[in-house]
Length: 266
Image (cartoon, rainbow, N blue to C red; front, side, top):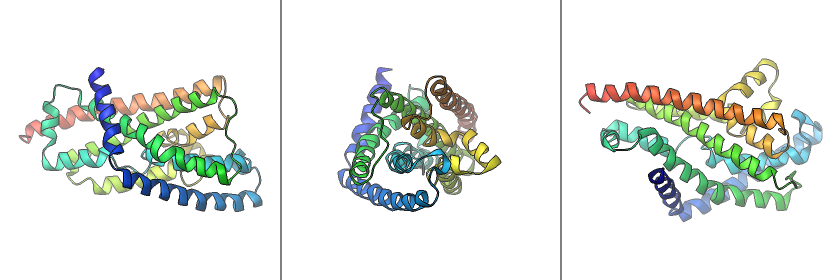
């Protein structure tokens, strides 16, 4: 485990190196946060209590969305693109020879990346949002660690989904099409565009049952106090269940893909 902790720390330092990109990202997240916030204000002025949120909760949801956009890599990217490129060029053969677990290696690095983005591109936009709007941030200090645990599970679910997308390159070689499809699905079903509680009927039920809801909808509802007591345990179980299932599927496909690399001669 010490090795994976070092890999995670290395992932944190790697993204901390790109300071100009981080400042640009903070600016972008903040601008989009203001655009969405004023859109939500207009919408909630017309429909108070829409989706089960009052206006302060809806605005909090907006800024949490900006905070978790890069933390959970809702639009994809990070290790996913690098792994696809290594599969395309054949450099993945070097990765498979390493005396470490292939999946855990990439997971550890991605956890380091997520930790940096939560601090670098997550906290600052929320601070700007809190200064400009009346947000429904929790006063109970115990809610914050509960939220962070939910964010950790969200990052693991996000990693497992992107790992599956990256593995598709073993068969497709060019994963651009799958990446684009995954980005659109992630944006829509994570609740990044609108809270999933606004989706009507069967579509809403389906959206809240899919793994992408773990990446924003569930952590946001934990912070907003929608999940407490046994409901909070169920929310964690939902996220952990998808994380385990998707990681197991990724490990299964990894085994199949590894045999394919051997057949092709690396």
